[in-house]
Length: 293
Image (cartoon, rainbow, N blue to C red; front, side, top):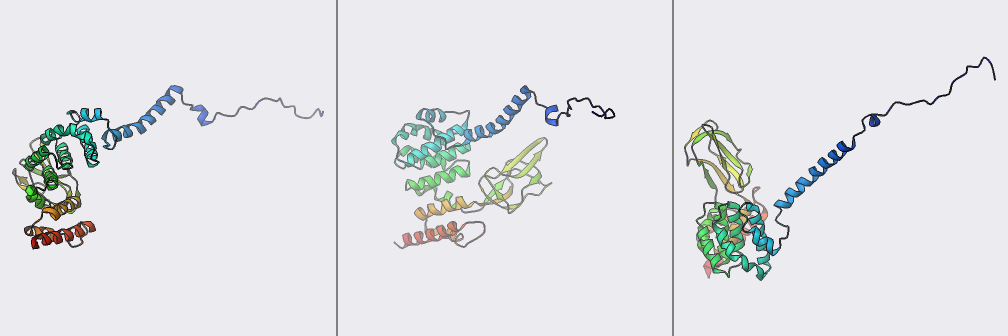
């Protein structure tokens, strides 16, 4: 070769490490990462599974759930499934009928409310009839309403005054005295349990919650005002489902005295769907036909 040619020593050229190579995750950290990711997916599923009433229960589960005072939602789950079995005329459910009667005075409102609905599925059981009559005096308007609706299936109009009240705006009063610190907005939808007004008395805060689902018609309490116990602080219009169920009940037991409460729902409004107006028309027709006979 040419003596003047530059001689080059051949050697392996080492490229710098890529960021991924420099920061390679240790196995332990990688396993921890996957565990956390798995739990993020699993926990919502477990919560949903524990609160979903559609999961089938065995007969043994039903008997256990009905007596699970530590988890009222277990009792509700069992009641919902029993109601479904009753609608299918499954005679197995009669073994739990005494439990249904017992639960009519259960301390948790949601359990009593579901129980009233379930007992209305079998009008042949006299003990259900008696229990529902006592539930007309329940402290919860939801329970009273469901009991009144269930009694219609027994051919008993005893709950008619309660059914009429389900068509009327509901006044909500302050359970304790205090200074108003926060209020909800008029015109907004309210679910059962929605906070309408907050009251402050010393270090104690009382939340006045919606006893039914519906729409906030008015808030009479003003922030900064001092209100005594028993003062009306809000008015709720009933929700469409409640109105529809009440109209259906009056279709069966309504009298001419109820027509003023029925006909107010015959016109179409943004607050209530078409089925409410249609049911009101059909209920008025049924009442007038009964009166003419």
